[in-house]
Amino acid sequence: MKTLQLILIAVISLIMTSGCEWSLNPEDDNHSVFNRVYEDPGFAEGLLITAYTLIPTNDYRFDEPATDDAVTNDLGNTYLYMAKGMWTAQYNPQNLWDNCNRGILYINQFLDIVSDVSWKPSNQEIEDLFIRRLTGESYAMRGILKYFLLRNHAGPGASGQLLGIPVFDDFIQESEFSTPRKSFAESVQSIYNDLDKALALLPYDYGNKTAVPADFSETKDVYSYNFVMGDATQQRVSGRIAKAFKARLALLEASPAFNANNDPSLWEKAANMTAELLDINKFDPKGNLFYLKAQIDAGSLTANDYLDNAEILWRRAIVTNRTWETNNFPPTLYGNGRINPTQNLVDAFPMKNGYPITDSKSGYNHSNPYAGRDPRLALYIIYDGSAYKNAKINTGVNAGNNGLNALVNSTRTGYYLKKLLREDANPNPSSTSDQQHVIIHIRHTEMFLNYAEAANEAWGPTGSSSHGFSAKDVIAAIRNRAGIAQPDEYLESVNTKEAMRELIRNERRLELCFESFRFWDLRRWKADLTEPARGVRIENGTYNYFTVEERVYKNEYMHYGPIPYTEVLKYNIEQNTGW
Image (cartoon, rainbow, N blue to C red):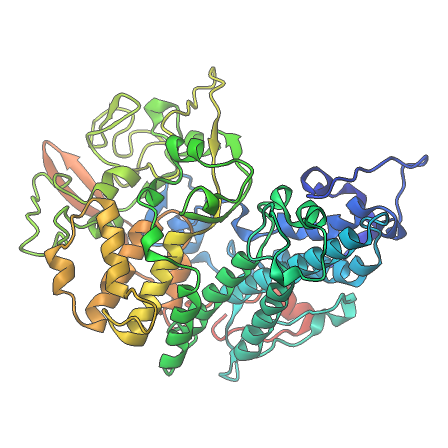
């Protein structure tokens, strides 16, 4: 990691995205020095805004080709290399070490100066509110970046101790980058501390009020409150978002990779923290359609969507392009067909009656494998015979350009990606039909699935403590929304913690597919990482299944990501075992 050259901050793109109203006026010589942060609030806030630009979920990583859920026809794809055995401490496409630590150091620099900047010198009340909000945002953002560092890089050291991350809570110089890693428990506590500090300063939700909230009793003027905490501040990190990351952290802490003794109190803590964010009666009936035109058009482009749309807890600003469609549409629709869902994932979708296709009660027809399936299969994946953009997509052998391995941009598995894509986008180079897309940081469906997982481990399938809804209730709501009528016999038959665990993990796989969860879910569960990626060869009406790619991982240590080799070499940071 290199020393940050903060005097060059004038180049930061933050000014375009800053939530404050100030602008930069060029100096005569157009050169800036760091002291400018004390004179120019927009320049100062750039330190914090830079951290926002480094949030790992600012775009979908499309890392499923490193799992059993997808392969790619892009033979230079870094996740393909990972899956084929090239994942090392020197080659790590999942490395967030530099990214997140860089953001943390920007935040620490900002915390050093936030109280000394003239945010609104003409109004002390507004000045104080800016300091409070921006300080709270900084602690929350630091906790969020630490969370991603921990998820990607925690693991057992050579001593056998479960290690976390170096904790940087002050702006440091290069000589201090050799700070040893804290234990996993100490790292977790550091993140909780940051998020709790944020919760003490931030409103639960932003938005204009008719009266000053009780938590801001020192503020007398509702105009001042709305100026700083009102509608114009939407999409900045809030108290609700800080609580969501506390709940995410609690689930990580309770998971098998980090909870070797399966301490039930950790599962209970995760369930309780997550339940605070949820209301089963407000479960969004269209939440699994969040990326489609109707849902995007119905949501507010400026407000926090949970006020209009119960599915989205936190998202990026809406983006307009057709990049995902160009990358992933089938060739006949001017796409490159990059992400190819596997037969493994297709087989995970049950029948519409709720039974797994392996169950004799399912009614699954091997000669007509896509008939009568869970509607999410057709919603998320293009399979042979699918209708898309008023065209029939055939993926079999000798089925044209969309067929199996027909072209370099054809499917390698017999399937194409459909989820997250806008059917009304047109990748034709002669077209100008870009479309709006939403990139989600946190969906409520994820939170419900987190709760179901933790509640089942803490209290079993039907236990709920005092929350009023159980793991089974959550899964019933998710399956009902998917089109599996409730009550369904299969779900009713699942009455043990072990069977419910398997079902919850499968529902999570389906609901969150292609949103960059599978890679780290498999690792925190300590599940088998070596399941080969399979496809289907359809020829003369016959379905033959084959291995497309092996998954070359070492289960004994690759449930944890490595520390970058350069950090180990330069600063003697302790590496995770096996790397």
